[in-house]
Amino acid sequence: MPQPSRRVPNRLVALAVALGVVAALTVSTGARQDTTMTRLFSPVEIGADVDALPDSERAALAHIIEAARVMDGLFLEQVWAGNPAMLLDLATDTTNRGRARLDYFLLNKGPWSRIEENEPFVPGTPEKPEGANYYPAGATRDEVAHWFDQLEGQARADATGFFTTIRRGVDGGFAIVPYSVEYEGPLALAAEHLRAAAALTQEPTLRRYLETRAAAFASNDYYDSDVAWLELDAAIDLTIGPYEVYEDEWFNYKAAFEAFVTLRDDEETAKLTRFGGLLQGLEDALPIDPAFRNPALGALAPIRVVNVVFTAGDANSGVQTAAFNLPNDERVIRDKGAKRVMLKNVQEAKFQQVLTPISEEALSPVELRDVTFEAFFTHILMHELMHGLGPNTITIDGRETTVRQELRETYSTIEEAKADVSGLWALHQLIDQGHLDASLERSMYTTFLASTFRSIRFGIDAAHGRGVAIQLNTFLDAGAVTVDAAGRFKVNHDLIRDAVTGLTRELMTIQATGDIEAAEAILETRGVVRPEVQAVLDRLSGVPIDIQPNYVSAYALADDQR
Ligand code: ZN
Image 1: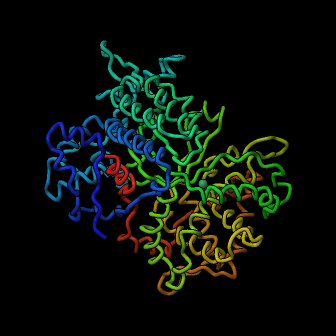
Image 2: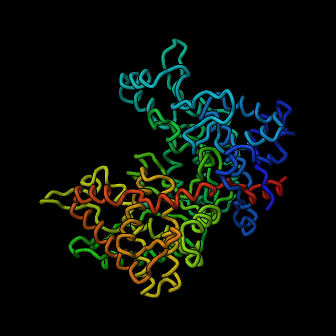
Image 3: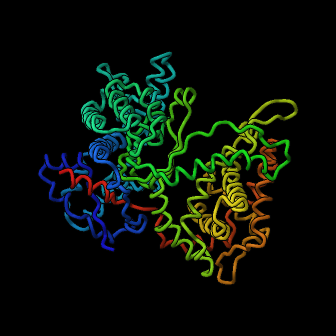
């Protein structure tokens, strides 16, 4: 496969045109083999069935992609004030090394490698500013924190809010600047495209999101458009605006601009609806003391399965997002709840580019035919659903409390492990009941085994990785997973189901009884990387960490409309 060229976002092209460097940007950034940059992200085409959309929606989509492109430039500015100038500088360097740097700059949205602890890769780059470009240059975290502490009421809420930056006022003191003022020009341009799309779409819930979000860019009040996003249910599924706060490493207050332009996956959505109707039956059959089961599960938070056409800004920096929960605004969550969005074609690309080569190193060759994307994705869906099953509100010595409160810092790891392992338990139940194909029985265990190495490779200091280590070690101890003389892993299909059921029971019982000592003991003895697992990780140095998307259907659409 030829190396796909990485397209440069429009706004950057506009910037570049102004400086007469567009020629450098429109050719392939190609050959990048001279640095470690190249090995970490595997280039891959990402697209969805845009041609299946009605004309009205396809025309709306073209405007939506234009609006999304604005988020790339906005996010670059948010990351570091020096980014726009450095981008133009990099764009003039037509050597192979220069192209490689530009390519990696666009992937990381700045000159720091996000998966290598923000190591700079462009000579002369300062350290990555922890407060990003949300706070005044030269200010320290303590100064800003001290100023926050002195504020009261609305001023404090505004200063620490998602949608403001902090700048120096004319008096030299700190001042609050709303995003609608700080980023006025680009936001007006994005709003224009959103309104043009709203005028074209025939889908009322999409039109409402587009119109309210365009209004929010000018008013700085995102509430109505967050609600419209929760209610969005259309062929085009869109998330655009300021959302995640991780780029603000000082306080996690300020929201970064991003966009996910996607199409709803109707087949997987139907599968989710079908599973939704089976959840109470699964809860009633959980392998725990019947007193711990929930006789009436609450309403399910909406889950959307979509395929990505285009992403921009924070959403397209470093490791690609495979699923997200939004909004983050507690006010909206309290009033209207939240929604989970799962990016199926991104998951599939990661499966092919990363999980498949990992499997080849980690598993016995005979196991490889049982590693399938169908099993991988179905288990991810079930993992999400299982977060809603099992103990949540619990009673200890007559006192009503929650699992989260009782298990404290062990909660996330135990909960993630529970969702994984009980997801396997639940899928086997649904196979027994004829709701899922019997072929999944072998593939789901083997595919899960392969995926444990990918999770642990990301590190066991994160809840998910450590939860996965607990499962893998439990299966090894039970003989349900074995290691051959060559150090390759294999599922023992005679023992795996019992091991899965046993661990589901163990974890859910810890949750139901709020037994933090038992949780800590599990983390200590089984939430670790054992030598036979480390040996596999050591063999994975040539396997990419993640993917670098080339949004083929978005670019084809843009060419069509020209
Ligand atoms: Zn989870």
